[in-house]
Amino acid sequence: MMPEFAKYLQQDSILILEGDTKKSAIEEIISHAATRCTMDEDQIRDAVWKRERMMTTSVGKGLALPHIRVNGFPSPLVIVGLCKNPIEDYKSLDNQPINVIVFLAADERNQEAYLTLLGSISSKLKDDNVMKQILECHGDRSKVYEILTKE
Image (cartoon, rainbow, N blue to C red; front, side):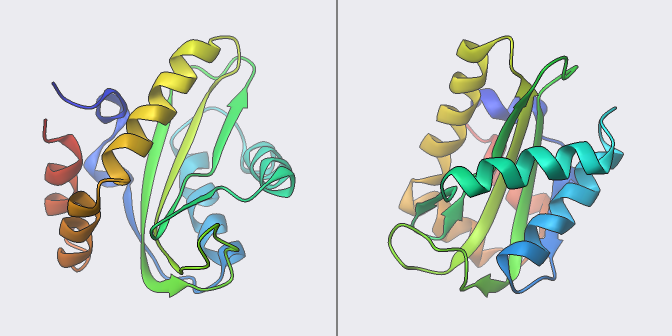
């Protein structure tokens, strides 16, 4: 079965991130997110950085999962950022640089669906083999899309 989050992933939502800091990489994702939903960029930015101030969204092994829940968000939004340069200042739990950032935004009224999506992203990308395959794609977005949507 295809991972739950893959239903909301589109090939053009896989970005090659130019930034080499946590702030610059996340800002690239925020800018793209604003083009994919009805929220404006400042609303997304406020929610993302509020969440980041609470606790790092790095989950280790080169992966970060910034995520927000917003009242009235129309449909879940998933954006995958492939870091052209590993992000050293992300303050990851295992002190490793971040190579992949997966952003999730969803409606706060359906916590169960939100947690299911977040769990499916985490399960897929915490698999060492999947991360290795993604990194070996060297930024080929179509190959990354295939890896992420594969059952």
